[in-house]
Image (cartoon, rainbow, N blue to C red; front, side, top):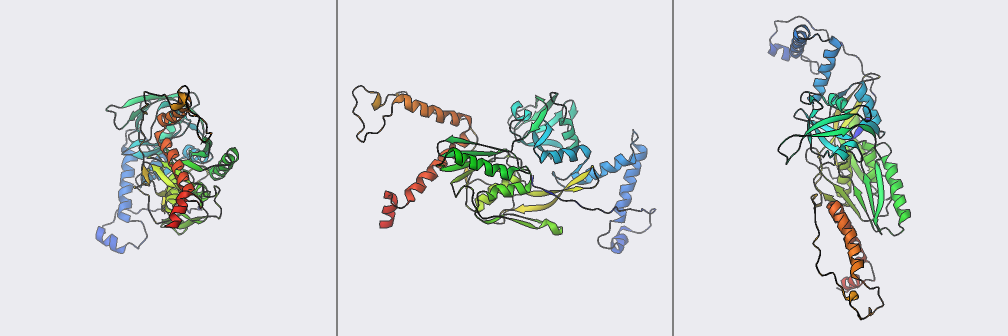
Length: 448
């Protein structure tokens, strides 16, 4: 989620409620000054409050009831606004730094249940088989129905090494099923990078934390040191649930020379903001493919949308999650805060991602693909007495081809989307080479 941190000095508001008045609702509506709280609705609230306090089967303190009222107000606004008690507030502050305890799941609320936006890489949830889109209906022996987001998160937290049984409903599976997950200390490394094969680099951003922008730049420089002749990069944002808004701006900035990255619009004065790239593309314009899927949310969509609008990258995969709102964390005491949706964000071309998502330039579904191997693996180079290559080139024997096919096949079997992204990068490089002055293709085009 895009997260902007601000601190407000909030004045306490005292409400003095009079006894019931004979005024009609219409008269109250006419006499009520604009901007003031509706008197009749406040009376209804106090009646409900009084009935609960006096008639509920168990005694509940006023402080608890008022806290429940605050939680209810926020939870009914949208799935991402919430009340943060001391534990939740502390967890949120820790999460943005990249270390927290629990299962390793980015979650939201849907129809009263916990919905998995994305399991985080290298966490107990990912290893146990939790998938984006799963609906959690029970945590241990407790039904999630009726829990607030903070209550559900509290249930998922626990000491390292302790187990929790999570009951999941998954599309395509008829019955709910249980997963036993062992809690751990979650240390999220937001950026990982490696050379896929000579000339082609891979950068994975798992979550947008405070230091993700600088981590990405360092990862790009490391790849450039490892391979001085990089021909293209893949930026993997799949199952990235988002995070800090500024980090998404910094990641996008790393690939742009200039231009608008994202802007936000809201009701309050400081909600309307614009973020732009600073001069300098860290990759010097290398071809770029960005992978997204339905687990790519919020800050991930900011990056994909901006690079797509600027035509800086080819977006590949499946449609993203569609979270286009900004949450502001507003402290209301030393230990408590509210997380309030205060703005919507828009891509440089003015697209709202909210409830729509980013549509890839090339749709590639995640699938299990099995390559069909030819039966006859014999090549000319395997034949006894074959002629040498006329240009003195290296021979291509069946064993050499099998090794190359095996490497490609392993990537295809493991991750077909990444395999297709790599092939696209190779195609972009070949096309760019053909357009360079001096090539046969370029000369033919000039002659025409």
